[in-house]
Amino acid sequence: MPHHPDPHSTISLAFRHADDIDGVAAAIHEDVSSAARAGDSLFVCCDEAAGIDRLTPTGQGTWGNHVHFNFGEMIDLPAGPDGEMDIEGLDVDGGWLWVTGSHSLKRGKMKPHKHDAESGLAAMARIKRDPNRYFLGRFPLVKRPGGYEPVAVHGTRRAAWIKLMKKRSKLLGWLEDDAHLGPALGIPSKENGFDIEGMVARGERVWLGLRGPVLRDHAVILELEMGETENGHLKPRRIDGRRRYRKHLLPAAGEGIRDLEVDGDDLLILTGPVTGGDGRSDILRWKGFRAFETSGVVPAEAVEHVVELPYRGPVDHPEGLVLWPEVKGAALVLYDAPAKARIPEPETILGDVWKLG
Image (tube, rainbow, N blue to C red):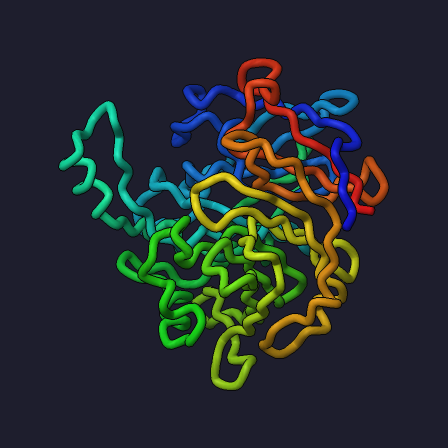
């Protein structure tokens, strides 16, 4: 089994302070959840906001010139422009930026500084739905002097998404009677509940990687084929019998999916623990993934283990994966809950470039 104890190199990413950005409350560099790239524009997202962030090169191995794009200012979101989208998946394809929220439920937290034993128990009984999390769609990308920008309209291209509603998700509605996923829809994220944490798109085909549920030792990838309705919304076609999705179960040693990235004919899969606890993370390769055109269990010989990422306990949780063409055959991994050593300066984080073998 391949093992790489040290990354090939590190990349420095510098952000503006959250206080300087409207609609952003959390420190972006401490809460990265996905990444995608269009030329020299690196897009990353913080799952606490309703937008994405763009960086461009500032030197050898350094990226900055941070710009934030608020999707709530481009389109109408059901919980308003400042309600978090919990963006967990980004991809760039054919001049489009694809974006998905987690579609997950959120359990209340016990806060020792605020709750005693009884009130903490009550807090953890509350399950919250954030309708902005149900976003799944795409924005046109436009090349400007400073880099690529997502916009609502550019010429004949318009942003489009699966119709949003305040009380339910269209996607989850299509999954309600699914024998594998239906039982997970009412369970919060990080408890083996339904939780999207990765996305790639090629043409009309879209693949969604699920952190949960994990079924025995298999991670789940949903595949959709998008059509556009007369009123401009996206809607998956019926492709697998009467269903609007295909369902691929991948042997992943009990790990859930944290991000996805296309590498030629293959799909790279960043994995990690399903729950909020710490655990192992890996990069897997699903060989020839586009040739799998029916639902089913992916055979073990089609999934290759590429990199076992270092386990660092409560810090440095791998969350973002993007190919890094500056190093042949490599990908950049970005981290949530970064260790102090990963923050060399305020609002700056180091990402690791790993050779894929």
